[in-house]
Amino acid sequence: MSSGRIMNLLVTIPAESRRMNVGKDVIRVLGSPTYICVLQRKDRKSIVITPCTAEHPMSFKVPDRLLTDGQCRMMINGIQFIHALLETNGLAVGKDHQFKGRYDAEKNAVVISLEENELENERQSKIGLSL
Image (tube, rainbow, N blue to C red):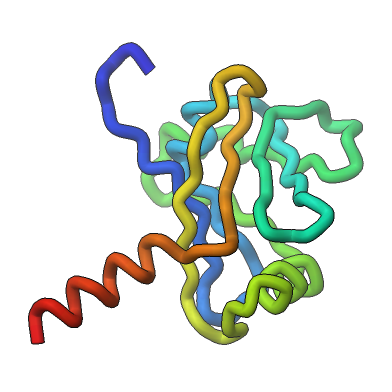
């Protein structure tokens, strides 16, 4: 992005583990698409979020006012999908999870590794240092 703004490419799964929240910067970096797709590798160790058409079988509509309304959120509901992702990666269901992505400009996609919960590890390190 030319503004020099640091992008925080986050996906969170709240403790109730019924939905995935896609951060606004993920949508911004993808060019504010109308629809996004959430694709996963066969081993489910990472997911990719990319713009797509409404006809794509894994498409999700981005709320029209997502980037203009501070209260609006991009949520993807899917209990089975979310639980499978968590369990495959050895992550506890019923616990908050937050994952940081990286932007692949060549593919116009945000790649999110589920193998290592970087933000949680960072938080744990800070807690450990502050004791």
